[in-house]
Image (cartoon, rainbow, N blue to C red; front, side):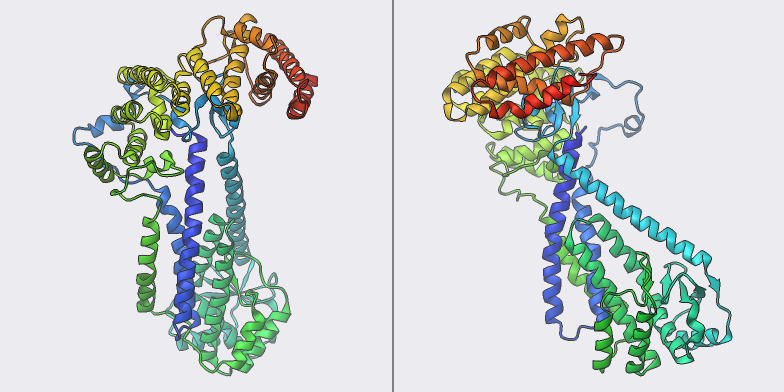
Length: 632
């Protein structure tokens, strides 16, 4: 099961990738239209409509999991029946496996990169940067979709309040224009409404033409011109394009391109319908005068799913074009034209879709820079996995191939296959980033639930391999770091020794190791404090040895490392303020224990401030505000 942070990363990376690829596609389309000398408004409209649809396809591609064929020996009928209680083999160990690459579980409490917060109260979902950004996107998407739904509702209500127009001259004008435009029956219904100032077309399946209440003052020629324009919208099925552009803008609300596309499509469809109307009624200057009269009659209807004759923002450009141009298109794009445009655009979309970040199977030596194992596991297909296995068989050092395989097997719950690759990496390339990637690290700790026996054996073997690697590479800080980030789950004191050794070797990057140690010390102090208060460990998941918390307190009391006092105090502040702990039946005792733990954290920060108050002032202020509250 993937964490909120992992799913957020997949979503945002898909959005970012689709946004960049859409820009490339628009650039190619713009160059193509510039080179196409015979382009007309309907043709341009068709091109940009296909581009808008392609934007959604470019996003949909990365979010769809590949079809993974089931092995021949899988009992599908049994697999579909949900068991009452999952077996040990079916329980997926969670925890570090859900974290991004290089996110050592104990460090999550320090750098706030999201995922699972591992502390004395167990795993908690924490909103990291990926999650926060995804939350902003989803709020924006909800607002845009709500606006679209409201527009549909208002358009429907507008039609429902309209009054059917039964005058003979409207029927005659409709018959004349529809036959001139070869519009098949049934023709749209004509209504009048006092709520609009300019003609509007609403709906796609059963389109309706709405006329303003003052249409009776129009002469017959103006009525025919207006109906010619509105029937052109119906014949072109512009309602479909309006909905497509609105959906594209809702999904890509953060992208200026989506907003530009909607405005461009609206302007082009109005130009195409102007062409069709002029071809039907003739006299372009007189038609331009009709547009001007409609524009000054009142504001256009602002409903996303309705098409107003005065709705385009480029009314001046439309009138100027009518007065200067001498050639008018039919306003339509033929089926052959649509097919040609689609055949020209789809290969570009296919090429851009294939460039989703997958590296070539022939070049899988290194783990990709910024590798996201979640997304690769999500997207790798069964056939790709088999090809990657052949790559690894030929070249065992192909870590890029192993990375994708481990992500694929983790995503598809084939833990035995994943463990085989993970153990090979630990045994042969312990300095590699892949040695502490999510799928690898998950075999080195027992997860939230009891693992299967096979996974337990893999975890034990991984711990043995890390101890052997530490003995061989005592001076390699990368190996020390990776080993400590693994052993912290079951042997915290061993991890502490490794971090102290790395801190000793790398004095120039003391903060990197000090923060890891501080997270461990804060965990030990908190668990010891709660245990002594009769509250148990409060869900602590590290296998802390007896006496570690007391030893840490004595070590901190000596004051030999004032910075460490500040780091531990900061970790305790974060724990108390950001995590809501509960203990049924002992609420009063828990509140008192948390208050005492806060006072201890305050003492640590005050002492750390003796060296330099600046780094700790904000945490002290935050803690004291919390302590002053009734629940603190």
